[in-house]
Image 1: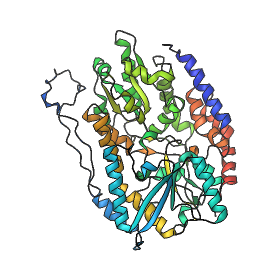
Image 2 (image 1 turned 60 degrees about the horizontal axis):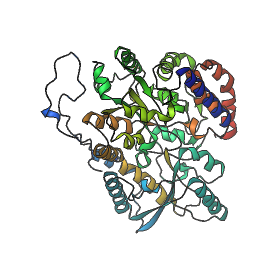
Image 3 (image 1 turned 90 degrees about the horizontal axis):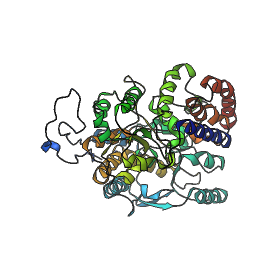
Image 4 (image 1 turned 180 degrees about the horizontal axis):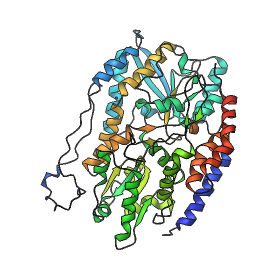
Length: 492
């Protein structure tokens, strides 16, 4: 296998960033977290002063009860019912609406339960049709030109919000009667990502959560045990799984005999700095309804974060062949694999004992672990201006998210525990990841004006790579970014 030296990887990463720069431009009671097995028959480990890699005690299954939230959220719905009227949802991933044979049994059961609840609550009948994003665009454009009905709701990738907005096929969700766009059952960063000026073009929440869009840190439990260090699971639980802690683990590899690599990244290789930037507690932009979007980070406050990000991404002990990172992790010589959650089926049967962690925080004082959703796979809801019953669309969109609140994520965790995960702790880690998804406006509208990526994620990637300083990027592009906001959006 060919291993690319880190200095060449750095060049490759920088080239990728430059190319991108140039081109830019949950019921009543939850499924909960379930035990995989009973480790109580394991021998008690010797007291070494650190927590061993196997759980020292059984973790009780966490039964999440969302009944209070459900009761509180339902107040947002109108008192109207619809006499069995059909609700058509057009989606690029329709099995997230109406499950098919490709959906795991646990998640399928949850989606069916949700749909049945909404149907009985509102007296409607939900159906879903699937089309690729470009076909949907053509069909919606034809419907808008003819003033004809297309669908009550649409679901599509974040990357298409700007495309659909520019084509004039998205209505302002704020025009839906009684619609509570600021409700807790919608993801606040997702709403920001789908908002420009006075218009909310699209939003997301648990009803459209796509686990494939999120990333994690997978780790080799055998190698970790060889390091004789505290379990990273324990650090996560204490809120101390930080970038410094990550770097302490990778630095300890040098004490092991043999050729070991600190980390590999395959599907996330081109946007790994972005993942770390968000997991470090930062956002690229803020876009609030009724104001112009703005850049929400600066060079001074992020200087130390970028130092840590660079140390992680450009670690000389990193596995340099990005196209083979997952395979290398499966061979047992890589400590960490930073990759997408849809990597789990690939490594499920690996001979390597592995665990799952969220992306590390910047510091222990940071409130949450954060997982940036990749814009090409993150799913959002919107509506076409020619919908026939705006009140029905409003109620259904809110009801889907109310009844999905927490529950969809719980079902995804349970499904993964049955099919992929190796230990009880990973179940809790996956729950953290799925319930802390983040989205950003910069990725939504990156293709609308080159100043948007240049002042945001391209600046982050190139600063991490040492191409130039962040302040220089902001000095060059922030003015153009502000101008682009005035040109693209209106604020009354």
